[in-house]
Amino acid sequence: MAAHGRGLSAGDGVPARSSVAELDAFWQRTTVAWHSVYLGLLGLLALIIGSSGDLSSRDRLTGLLAVTAMVVVYLLIGRRLLGTEEHGWQAVTQLLASWAGLYVLIGIGIFDAYFLLFGLIPHIWVFLPTRWAAGGTCVLLLGLAAAEVGHDGWSMETVRDVVPQAALQIGLSLLMGLFISHVFIQAEKRAMLIDELERTRGELAQLEHSRGVLAERERLSHEIHDTLAQGFTSILTLAQAIEVALDRDPGAVRDRLALLEQTARDNLAEARALVSSLAPVSLQDATLPEAIERIAARFADETGLDVSVQIAGTAPPLPANVEVVLLRTAQEALTNVRKHAGARRVVVALRFQPGTTTVAVVDDGRGFLPGAATLDGYGLRGMRARVEQVGGLLEIVSTPGAGTTVRATVGPTPR
Image (cartoon, rainbow, N blue to C red; front, side):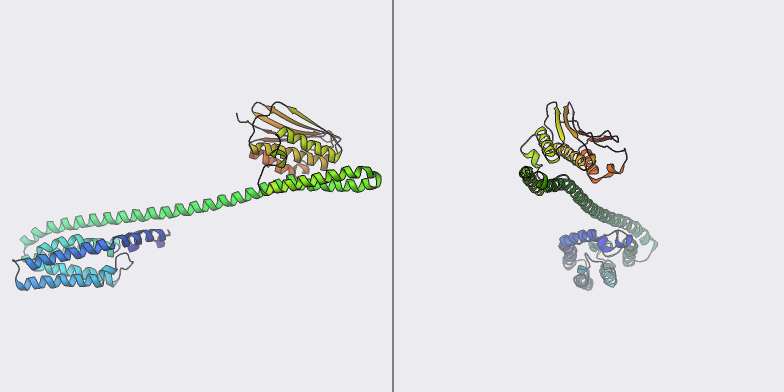
């Protein structure tokens, strides 16, 4: 029992707070029962002594005084020891006083007092650590045997009669005490294991929370890069084009301003959707092929490039996150064409095949060498991470002077 020093403790390198708390709760629930049993046994013995006709007045008075002394010592000292870590003079005083009273009762021939062992032996194991309790049990029971021999008269015959009884009492008492200690130690270990599991579960929950926060931050950074950042780039490009058109072609300014306003509105809608964690604006009121056609048309209007869209196959029902990944991949690939390719013609292809869906962006721009620094850009890394997150594959094929192909394949599609 950890509360009494017999089980595991903080000194063993294992925190025992929870087990101590459990044992304290146990003692709070059972203290009244312990007091009632022990005091009830003493009360019953007092009645037996008082009504016994075989005892002399002197022995009867001595027996009642012994029982009274045991009650008083228990009320003053013993009852406060249950559920505490006290192993000092109070525990020793309680045990010596109670067993001295039993010795007196046996010494004057009140052998009915033997049933007090049902209350006294458990007290040894409650008030003392296991090793001390085992030794104390043997010593106290041997003293009880000596008191009985002293009453019957010291002789070899009396000793031979008492020794088997004393040996049986010691053996049963040790078995009972060790069993009780084992039960409490196992309960203590289970309580500590539960503590450890609770701590581990808390640590795992905290770790999962941290990972979730990091994943959400990464997701938001990708979303911002693929939507707001690209939108602002488009607005900046259109503003520069308007500045040039003011001097060369004032008639085209109105069209550019209308396109600038529409781009700003779309960017604002993307920001609101991002805050609300909704699907991309392009997919809220359109299918994936329609959304691809819209971003391709807008890209053509903003850049003046020849942009064509090729759609093959019938679109199956795709999970929302898969559609978002395919759309974002196309958007990011088009942004890279705008920034780096120097292309004249761009093809956006969307192909639906049994089990897979592919989106590809092909340009005839300047291209780059495989393994070049361009491949390490944030946009391409974000694209690859997005595609792999839904179990897809991102391929980037490029040759200097021969253009670039960015292809994302996701599958299998659900049936």
